Image 1 (cartoon, helix red, strand yellow):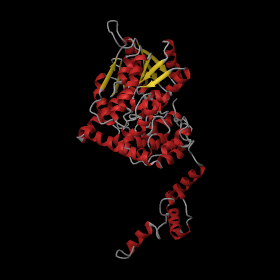
Image 2 (tube, one colour):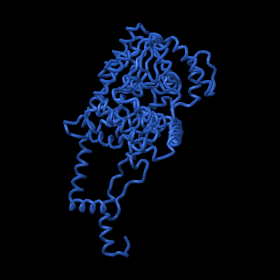
Image 3 (tube, helix red, strand yellow):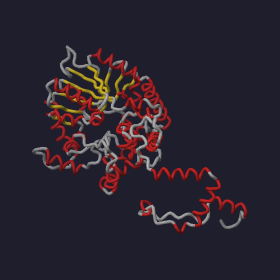
Image 4 (tube, one colour):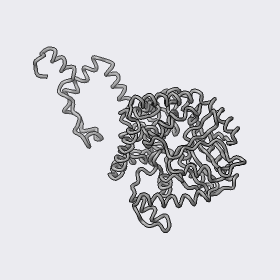
Length: 480
């Protein structure tokens, strides 16, 4: 089952309250985020070199997006020439139907799946469950959360919210003949034993794609555990699922993007495994899948692509750096968002995929401190995009390209801002309002409670700033 909500706004306030009240969760994320930020910093010791690399990464992604339709057709031609069967899916439902159809055609029942956010996005595990297939997550973090019937809380480290004691209890109770131990190496060894059997018995392997190279028809996949390579090479059928924005123009573009991805994601100069998949098993080869399928997933990306500003969302390389640097994510963790993509990039992606009527509240979980935009390795202006989506949420413009636009508009709030705008556009009205507010400050009611529950009540000054400046002009040495 997917476990993610298709209506993340529901109970968002409750999830935030629960997350903030969970001291263990907050401690785990606080430690993990600091650890990841420190590791990333050590990989980019030269600020000038980092900024130059970010410029190149952003330019590569922009160049690919500018030619996206052409590059996708080129990718399809070259993959097909290499023997990879290419499929297109406009929606999540279409993708799930297509993939389960491929598994059925191969008479497959047992599936191993490498880490893939695209498959999380479409709820592929739920589709497999409904079709009667057995699908085992092969990434260790994904395996842990799947076994616990949870959802990932981070796009790179799915089980980052768990500590070793809870994993030890889980393995002890759910994996037969597993003694309780908090030794991390032994826990990893236990998981690997289970997964090794699954790889050997699997009919189909599923994976995501980090980048697809149009000029060569090559699928690139980076990982640290070897599970990606096992999922893509041991079963007879490999199905790769990727969002259409992951295509890049040239193989020469790959090194810079990989430097940015791995160093920003896990603080590694390079991951343990770099998989470049260009074809199924050839006639004179003795291993590898006999069939390789590539599913190109749209699922709302074309709609995002159509808007020149929102298109910058598609520059994302899914490194998670924006989450690691976000003070709100650090305090809430990923589950509070209730979405596949949490944190700043989730606040931009999910409202555009689900619609602002379903996920518009996510954009409010942001202090606009700008840390995400400064950390993004491909310079996605995340604070600007969040502000744009907030505007789309309350706009009355019927030509807005975002689904559910205007559904976050509240009449009382809109009226308040209109009055605020009128006051600040009219000097005499501004003077009158500030004069009355300062003189009547003692009459203010004891609200808003959302503020006064934890802070001293707001109380206007005795005189407005303008009055104080006027007084200073009349009496430079007098009391202000």
